[in-house]
Image: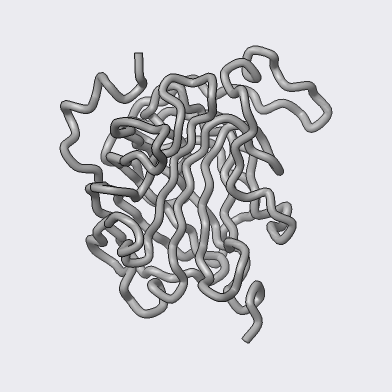
Length: 251
């Protein structure tokens, strides 16, 4: 049964709520799942670098699907994390805010990459949640792009930001990819007739040491002819900006 069918009737439009906090004492170490409220699936162990992947995990994630294992991504811009499941509206902002996806229910996020996307003509900041472990993702992935100019100009700002279909996105693009072997399989995102908004709380910037903390509920639409229907995705992330735009794209 498609993972989104049981909830399509409940969500008429997707919304994405972000809270951003900047803390000069933030650690570069991966954050463990946490928070004082909501429900969590039992965390799964992350294999050591020398361990072979679990065959059962391989079966659930048949293909490598990765938006960002590019050479210009630094090792510390990718964190392997425990899989966690969050449901709730009142997860505290700060050090206890964790990364996890509760829908679709077959998506176990064990990797978060937070880095500048390649290319300096139209620089954007990319946050990727996926299965697998660093440096490469596998299986499902969910990717957010925030246009740097839109952030700096205030187009992406504190408060509500509409999620619009491309190309008129107002600086926010989203993709969710499910590889062959999953039901459904395909690519969804901020494509035709997408509905939603992004609510930003706090100072919105892409300065180093800024923690981008987001809670999202999305009704994503098909982005290719082989994909059908709407895919509902909800969860949270905690992403730390480690490099400035000037470091990646010198003036």
